[in-house]
Length: 236
Image (cartoon, rainbow, N blue to C red; front, top):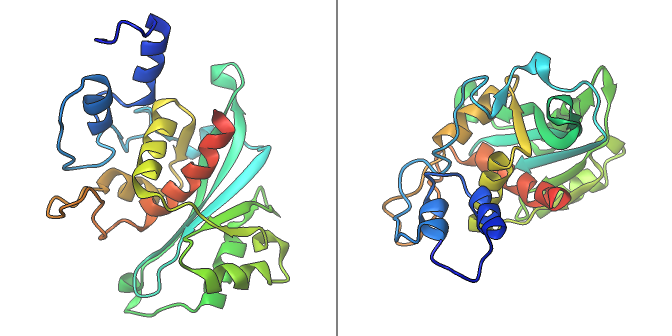
């Protein structure tokens, strides 16, 4: 608001890019030197009807495009989900992404049993279904997991062959998620409780000298970062 060279329309557009009350709004809109602490997406509300989570029965039934995203865990959790692109009839047919299915596996919840890479490949093949039929999404995966990416590319099942390494630019990905939510470009189905839980609990590491998320509980949010880095390009 202190920049006289910006039109009112431009200022309003910038304000819509950042959730009010977030560290980015405080910094880029209010000009405050705010410390990144606490919940990363502190504007997010996990309740159905609070603006971000939608009752699964109210999600679209048909989608024009699909994207899957994966944060691969061996000793840690494996988090993956499917987003579909569809028009929202409640907003004049404006397209948005809907996070409608998830697969989350944490060995700590299964007596320490780790899954193998082929077993995880089987799990995401099962994830790639909608309306009782197979779908064939593009996939973005943790780019450090080159062996798993190549395993999926060579798989005989078309549901997982369109696999590529994700863009793991952490701060930009965190902001992309915030922008997707703030603009109403992303909704989460109530059928995805693990993603809802960990999106809500994603926190800054306040003991680190650099701004970065805590590793604990970060797998679903990290997977979402990968997805939003890709999806936001379709929305702009």
